[in-house]
Image (cartoon, rainbow, N blue to C red; front, side, top):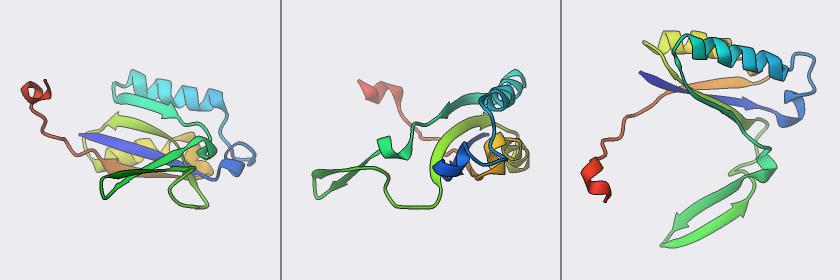
Length: 120
């Protein structure tokens, strides 16, 4: 089953805390999960200040600079993994270096039934 591990952290503390992960540590973690065959995708995100929030209301597009809501922790990146169950996904998420200074939300991915023939 696929799980999305969403990494949240306070951007100000993510790189300045004594417990902050170093890039080399994050790369090593990603490499281990990749080599185990469980990594499907992983990316770090640019600062929340570069975000754009899009809403469609009453047929009209509304665009807001920045995140959807002001929060203490921002989405910093994600890992899309393959795990046999939630317990294995949680174990993998617990090893994400940024979990020491933030949190990781683990969510099962819901398969969308899309008819490839209907996409033409």
